Length: 611
Image 1: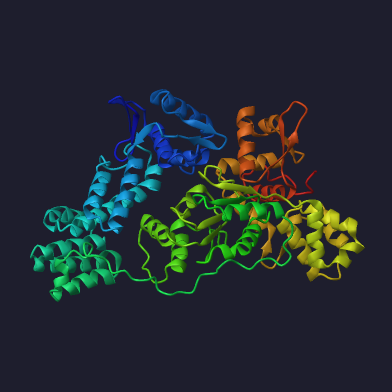
Image 2 (image 1 turned 90 degrees about the horizontal axis):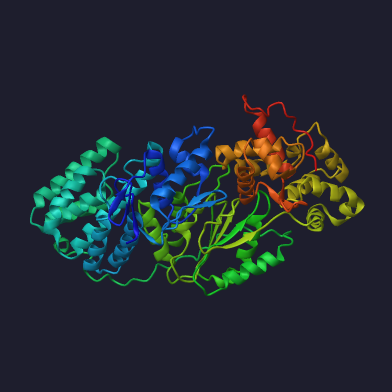
């Protein structure tokens, strides 16, 4: 008998029919977070936030390790909690999880509802609801409950609504009345529930009561939310007032009229290609091969440090392969100009408005995901998602099937994204960086100062964005020699980041966005590593700087590598990896740390970064 995990109610682990003791709220919270991730890695930072919120203890990592060790002993050898460099993952193929079953059954029920298989839909959705054993996440910390309960409760009430629609489609309005009345009392501002109750009452010959339900809803909406009833609720009200005979026939049960999609302009919303794009031939061929593959859709992830040219590569690939996606190409950015990270709900709405301009957008995230996947079925579209901060924001955009494809750019590697193809981009080769300068400022100007051009791109870490900004500044300053800009960037009394900013191109802001997305303990660790006298880092040196053992220091270094804030520079004589902190990231880390009043790094000078 497999191990059973319950999170849709009190947090429980059951083995061979026996309820196991898993301790207090913190181990329960870790278990729940791992199960909600559905086989994806949960970082130490995410676990810390679930346990302690914004104020983790200094011994956070050790405590997490202790709680996980206890959970492993309780669960037993059949299901293993695996440690990753960045956190933990719980594969559940050999176990049963009520949350996983709920999601599977509700998806099957929704698909059956769309196909007008009402009896089947009701069966699936009813079985999905039986997975709940009370209020979800019983026994977890308030931090995790506040973060996850609203989403879980929204999923549950959405399934309630869909099951009611399926039952109405089957003509079972009578037995629904008691259940719908109770649900409307519990969720008085849910207009879909109210309209379903009004319809069920009307079909039961209780027209006056149906109208009373509407009037009560209008009052509640005005008093609680300050809004009027929606057009859909008003339409049901008018149909009842008019005694519309169509209300006696379950509208979902009638065959839907087959109507063609409205003729709309094929969306072509990929940003302009760069005329001076250079290099990346191997990566472009690799992406083209993946985009033309007829296999199951897999997201194509392009990762690299801030300013490495991820977006430029993705845009070039999208333009080169646009002919293979005749139904359109779309672009959506998860980052705003003010470095705010947009939510999945907002971005998905933007994409849906482009794909289905005549469709009303659903109110819930899960319904938007279903509409998105249904809309892509039978179409061949290319979706480019820029600046995606984490795996969870990608998953809703992966097509369910068909020939549409998704390209993702991210500062993080997004390795836990199952089935993805990964392309990692780094700095330019020195010759490529000099070639970009030549294309921007002119061949003659570079030919006159070849040595200064090489120094300039080295001071830019050969980073495409930094090289482009430096070259653009030279275009804006035709009276400057290249050597003059090199001197300004190498001057230890200046911050080189001040030289890498012009108009809307700003290297500092790009790197700050990457650092701002780090968990607090990782940002602190990067600041301490930046204090070391050289950009070259060893595991033992990092351990001393961070006051941790070598194993934890290596985990930290590898986390920063995965988030493209450190590079692996080689292997030492003992066979240990060595790491490199790029000078521009170092400059931002020191600058950020120095702004903190209580920072131990405040006295550190932002001078030249030792090579």
